[in-house]
Amino acid sequence: SSGINAEWPLRPGEQFKGLKGSQFLDAVFTSTDTKSLYMALEAIDDYWNYRDYTITTEVLQKLVEMKKERGWSTVQPEFTNSFTYNASLRYLSIASCPELVSDAGSKMLACTETVKLRELVTKEKMYKFYFRHPATTSCTRPQECGFLIKVTPATEYNREQFNMQLVTDPTMYPADIHLHSDLISADNMHLVVGLNYRGRRNKLSRRF
Image (cartoon, rainbow, N blue to C red; front, side, top):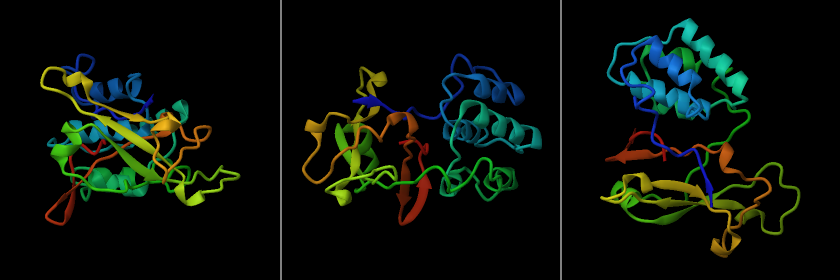
């Protein structure tokens, strides 16, 4: 199995400890742990979750430059709806920036099933995602193209064990789904958890 961008959102650890405002942003922009634009935006959203902060033109420009320098794709418009207080003015600048948010270059997929949060974080399980990559040239079962994500839960004695992986071993795939390993890569994936409270969608940490 291959690793995937499925860590919990960047939180002030050793490299972020004690940093505030622009210092925190600089750490996010320069950290090798920031592996995608999704992660950068989630880090900002988490850090200023309950803080009165505005995304300035300077911060927006840094995000655009960071995306270009690292060769990242844009984020899907639907993703910005998961931001804390997404209706506030501080996120409108991000959501309306075509260099950061666009339908082009990426696709949002949904898992084939829903689970209780407790099951997600305590039970080892594989989840199906159906997806026919646009670069697929020939396939005898196009409706069954996709991939599996294996969730390994943390334990009371080993919290670091929690992991999410793209399953690349073809023998682990059931008959109703198959992987095109030459096209599907964990390097270009970002997993998100969507919560539903009494029929209303909400977020956990937004990272699945």
